[in-house]
Image (tube, rainbow, N blue to C red; front, side):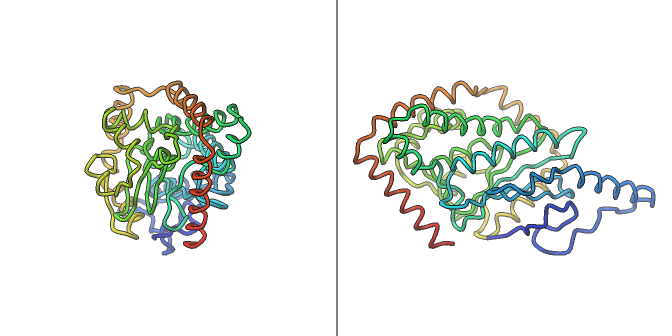
Length: 325
């Protein structure tokens, strides 16, 4: 898998460990070159230091492409634990308050994963089983609300004039797949796989799949995907239009770079096209929260056998992650 170095937080660093990219001075006059250096230094100082030191998110700023690369670095099983959700909430808050017009320029926000062979396994199954055993509906709903609030803000691109890109290298399951549906574009390596396995233990994906898939594909196709309990390849989702571009294994980062290079000249038009799409098919946060309520109710109705299967799946995912690591 392509790797981006940890020092990309410096606005003048390259993407794959090479020397920093040459300043795009072209035929600039000495005064113009000086102004460019000043602008770059100012942008570097405006990037909040806290953003570059989150516990489970690696954030890398590239001033040349006006992009913010983020990679999940889970402490354990690659899932949306409460700790990772906290990082995502702070991530969104810091981006929203420091980037955009009049602040640090930002054209692209990219999310990938450092977990080998996994984008994200989705919801915290171990936490779900614990809350279900305790009959804690409020705890289940609170977790789901946090997830859909993060997802809804991402679907709105944090109300910034930027394009969002999900980079998939490996498995995207359950809530991991749901999270990707909130991005403007998905670029996936050809060996990436996608699935919604919740139906296998008597549940359904409660953090956005119904609403977002119905919005993108229509209700019938959304139901087919949610109830099928099958694995979808990147190529199949590309045929359906959910995956924007395919990349060869190990070439995902480079594919995102090329996408940004091709999009740079038409960036304003693409941003406003995405905004128009959101206006044409509005998704309300309340709709997402209503589905979470149904999911929480259904979770409390799971049988002991369902809970055993849920725990077994969590254990299998943890073992696979440990082996890959």
